[in-house]
Amino acid sequence: MMKLKDKKILIIIGGGIAAYKSLDLIRLLKKENNEIRTILTKSGKEFVTPLSVTTLAKSKTFESIFDANNEAEIDHISLSRWADIIVVMPTTANFMTKLRLGKAEDLATTVILASNKDVLLVPAMNVRMWMHKATQKNVEILKDYGYLFIGPEKGEMACGEYGEGKMSSPNQIYKFLKNYFDKRNLFKKKKFKAVVTTGPTREYIDPVRYISNESSGKQGYEIALALSKLGVKTTLISGPSNINYQKNFKLIKVISAEEMFNAVKKSLPVDVAICAAAVSDFKPIKKNKNKIKKNYNKFKTIELEKNKDILEFLGKNNRFRPKLVVGFSAETDQINKNSNLKLRKKNCDLIIANDISKKDSGFNSDYNRVSIIDNIGKVKVIKKNKKSFIANKITEFILNKLLIEEKNLN
Ligand SMILES: Cc1cc2nc3c(=O)[nH]c(=O)nc-3n(C[C@H](O)[C@H](O)[C@H](O)COP(=O)(O)O)c2cc1C
Image 1 (tube, helix red, strand yellow):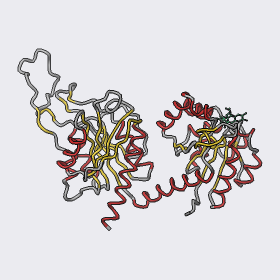
Image 2 (cartoon, rainbow, N blue to C red):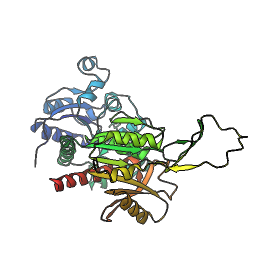
Image 3 (cartoon, rainbow, N blue to C red):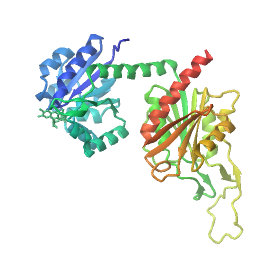
């Protein structure tokens, strides 16, 4: 197995019986020249000693946020900036609740809340604790917040019971971390560039009235976030939305379909274009300069004309066609058939078919259910889940396809 080396890994040790296994992970990582820093929670200290952790990590174990010596050396902000990734092992049920609530009540929770890095949670607990609705709700919400998870596994527990709740082994965590860094290095080395469109567009009739749709922009935003986290240089072109954007990527805000079209054109060339925006197909031929009054008798119909088709422009672009052109199709019926037609008409490589017939997902929802359809008609179904989860799955699929396309081209 190739090595995982020269990384900076912050390990937070929580108050569970599996805490002793963190010593094994530290040993494995130190063998490969990784730099390790550690935080022991108050309860974690009941299970392993700072002396063992410090000796194996070859660096001081941090314990308290109010330790004057700690803060002089390294504060909670720089500790989180220093790390390439943060690993919490074991992640106890209690610790997950604190993360869900956004607590900053000790050094561990404050560092995580202040972190701009990925945080890998490694849960370990009794099977009943794990299966409890409260814990499962925590997991769902923490996944949506962007926390990464490994395990728990099924097995015999320290308490003698059997079931899901056993912590992943240090070897499994090591492999996860290796895969995590390998993937990022690969995409960074490739210097992939992506443009993503999202949100609705507004086509103004007069200064205050417009034609638009229900799109929230969340799905495209989550995809841009997932791409940039994997090291892809990403530009997100977003129509009007209420999203509080994180600045992990270049963001261009637009209003109308025409502005979106121009922004996409300017962003070329890219390796992959993902068109998740619900672009208005039509716009009023004429926008009234002043607000149209109620008693405006002449105004009987609004004449519309077609907007330029961004997806088709990209798919049929001879000069700057991205290696992969990915469209979204929001359908209420005959989803696969209609999406396939769209794929052919616009010469895309992939279509993400979005089932908007159900009220519990799609437009204006945190959830989505999609099928990824390729140009030979193969369909991969992703069941209803949070848009952040769906975005990770779509992104993974697209980047793997991009790697295959590259191989075929070379
Ligand atoms: C012997 C013993 C073993 C425990 N093991 C676990 C465990 O495996 N998982 C867990 O979620 N909580 C476990 N707990 C409960 C936690 O220690 C407790 O909730 C603690 O507050 C968690 O601290 P933390 O939030 O710093 O991780 C255990 C408690 C005791 C006394």
